[in-house]
Length: 142
Image 1 (tube, helix red, strand yellow):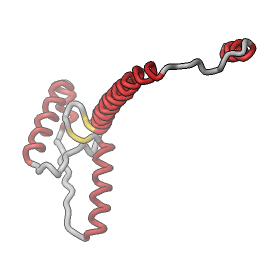
Image 2: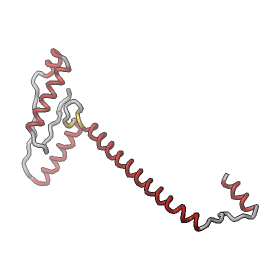
Image 3: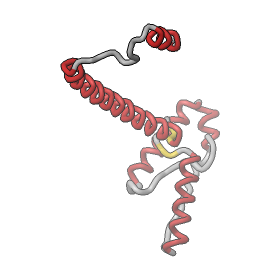
Image 4: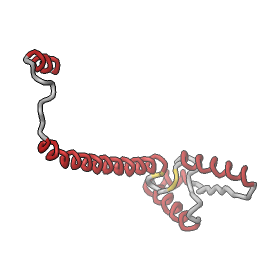
């Protein structure tokens, strides 16, 4: 299509670029500026939404939705990070495991809904009892 257009222009002896008055050029300059600003605003808006969604997806991928605590994958990452820090600083640290005795029996006898309520209660207690830089997470499977 473009080749046909160019061939027609050239065979008829017309200039490839039509004459444009200065007035027309000056009239279109603000439109070019407005287009550039609008495109920049739109691009920035899309980038901000993508960053927000990315953070949201990362949180979903790393947190237990029921308990609002780190899932096993994030817990393992945090433990590795803490161990790496400990090797560099030679400081003290602690890792605590809590076992809910007979939890399987609670699930079997009262149902998974009651078991989930028990886990949520324990999780909330751990959130209250730990400092913000400490993070409870599951070591076993439910």
